[in-house]
Image 1 (cartoon, rainbow, N blue to C red):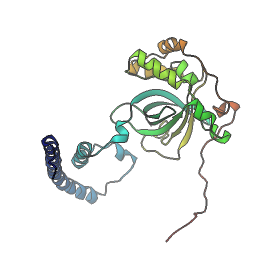
Image 2 (image 1 turned 180 degrees about the vertical axis):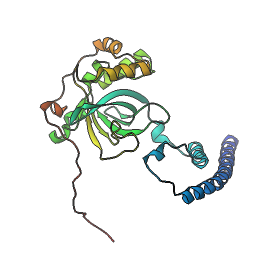
Image 3 (image 1 turned 60 degrees about the vertical axis):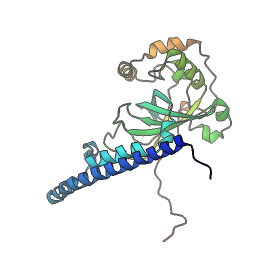
Image 4 (image 1 turned 90 degrees about the vertical axis):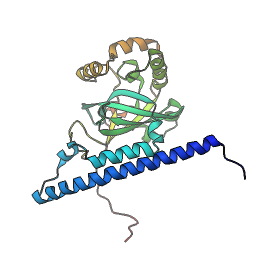
Length: 275
């Protein structure tokens, strides 16, 4: 029988011991936390405490914190760990340019032609997940059916105007990133209408669009973002002056025609129902 190299044995044994010890520790935490919360739950039931949207702002329990700690130590987070870029920009609802939202994107670059991003309302630990954006290259966008293109917006103005920012990375790296993004197209859905409902993600997902010229985006939003994140849209606009402005592929930014697409709920019959 072939002997296993000692270093691998020790690594495996050490890892097993670490996970086992962590599991035992968590079990102890959860046992104590469960007992403590059990008495609290009984008290809450006795008083008939109401449950409403404000519940999401209550502090996390000891048990929840213990479970999160265990998951963070013991589980794989490969899709999340693959998110390599943080971008900050702004969207508006496809059917209402007056509703403008700051969007914090955390993106994975899956291929040269495709990025996928999750969107939060801030870059703080307690940020709310409010949407997603898929980003494709010009080559891919050109291949899409005409009806599909109407759901997508260009990034040419977002990059050239300085509106789109990548806080915290060196200028040379940001310049290279923006050169790649200026010719791309995004399809964005916000699942939480955070500008209307702060407490809970009520309603249905909404199609979002990007700005295409000066005067459309509320300058106060940009000033607030710049001060908070330590960036400058005006300075970034100057730095990106040498990035060529691409011609927008027909079909994108459908809202510019004066009409747009937006989701609505429609009651439909259930198909293939099973008992």
